[in-house]
Image 1 (cartoon, chains in turn yellow, cyan):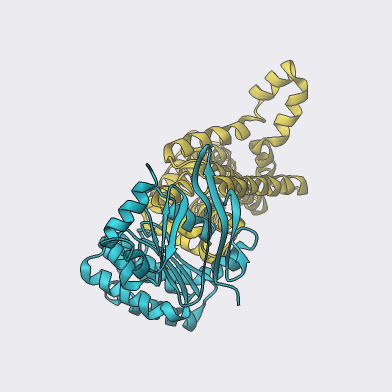
Image 2: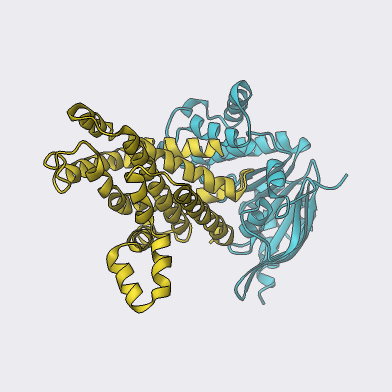
Length: 240
Length: 241
């Protein structure tokens, strides 16, 4: 499993994928924080403008990362090699997921100049910032798990990307006022469900510096569930 | 002792189409089985089921006594498998790729290095060890796939068209490599080259429309008609009539 994760991670950096992803991620997150986020004008020493854009950035960037995860293996035929090595499908799925997650962690870690900036300009609560970063990592993990499962469904990377963005959007938007108000007006039973499964709602807790067990369990089970789906999909469609 | 490869009533259906239909045979240590048949006859499908990549619709296959579906990881440890077309990760270098395969199989450190060196020597890859696989010619790529299958010195080898795309010299080298390894292993190779079967195989199995139609020594097979080509055509085309 570690060997698979290592190969995957090295694979990101062997191709332009890693560099394009990281540069675009840093450029967009920085630009959004300073322009729309009004980083300086707010006069507050925190990273909230930055964190508020992260889930929406990941919504597009993470599926770009996951779309090739299995689809590419299928296209190259290497899936036949990988799945006939003496590893279980679960190990292969987790190995790939861990590598992609580690890659997102690297991209997030590279936003450290923002953190240095707020610390130089003022004295922010670094505990809250740390919680925010942990939250970002979980959002990335959740989207990665969905995207990977969808990538296992198809040989076509474009389809994998579009489906993954849609699925992530569903979970991101489920807790937004537009959706919950509509649901509570029409199908009240679903409103609570929608809020409960929303990735963004959970993430907001982290940005306030609250790391609750419920949110941790939510993200852990969310990720595990989609990894299991991924394994099942792989088992049934591995040879197609 | 039981045979290293045992296949019983192996069947694979895709919807209404039956790709492999009740194939049974076994391969002992020391045997090299040539797997013959027209394109689409079910050769690759049979090999994929044996490697655990496809799940059989019915029947069983065992490698070294381990069932390929119920005890898949143990079965795959005993197996060196070259998939059709020898897929590899194009962006990796030859030695990084073999290192990956070795680490997944649990080898580390000096043992891993020694195994990679041995596999590269057997397949004559030392000259390109640091080249990305995508820059290599077809023949080299095929040999990288072969090196990957030999890395852990498995008792069972399943090679899907190991000499496809190689030039005559390379074909000769691969054949002599197979002959060298034959006494200690059970080997299945699929091929379209009939002389290859006569040159390296101790048994020939012909499969057509998913059914096993011949299982005998290449010499006996050749004795059925004026030459092997004619015998092959009569057997595989005659079945269609």
